[in-house]
Length: 100
Image (tube, rainbow, N blue to C red; front, top):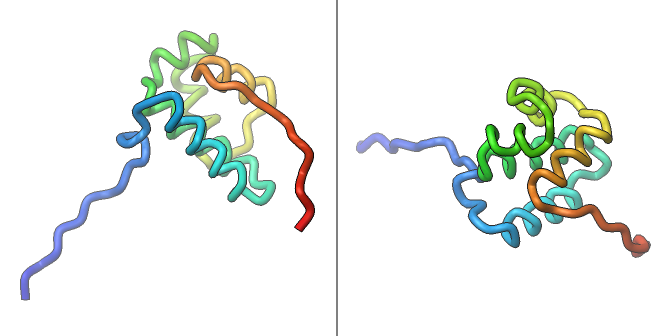
């Protein structure tokens, strides 16, 4: 039997435009179910797609702190989230929740 070779999937390789990045973040927020680390990981994916060095420069944070904060293993502070969202060229919006 022939052996199947697989490679890890990296969503950052597929986030090319700001519109795709915003749609990905929106989908992750909807699926997060209150898990802040999950949303942070999604921001990390977007930051890697955009270029972590540039995001670090634009946010005023170090690359190392970004990698740690956006790893999905911790929940970064809201100030960090706001800096990263701005550095990514995204914006945060609120709307009334629809009860199901």
